[in-house]
Amino acid sequence: RIHNRFHVNLLRPHFPSDATNFPNREEPDAYDFGAPDDVEWHVEEIVDHAWVKGTNKYQFLVKWSIGEPTWEPQSECNKLAAMDRYLELMGVSRIADL
Image (cartoon, rainbow, N blue to C red; front, top):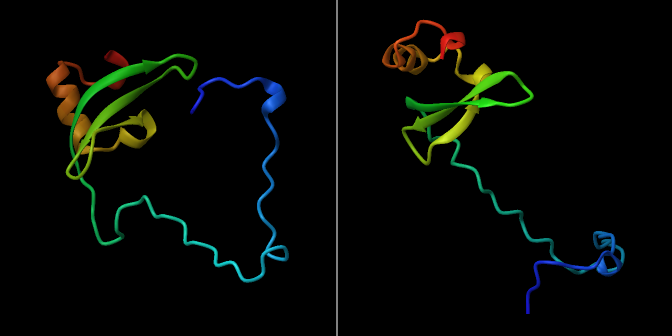
């Protein structure tokens, strides 16, 4: 059975296996979750924005040409052409006016 709660007394620190203890063991390659290097991702549009409490900045929901939309910080979106189109659709000229 899998439990979603554990008493703190059951928790133990993790120590990775030492190669000296298992000299003939082959280490599996780590799975690469990233996209192939030859694939280019382009911003199609910005579809939403949200205020991030504590940072006093916005984050924007970016729709990519490949993959799922992701929330990106304002600093990554400031110079995108998609940002200009989004501000125009929102009827403002500056991010501060959102």
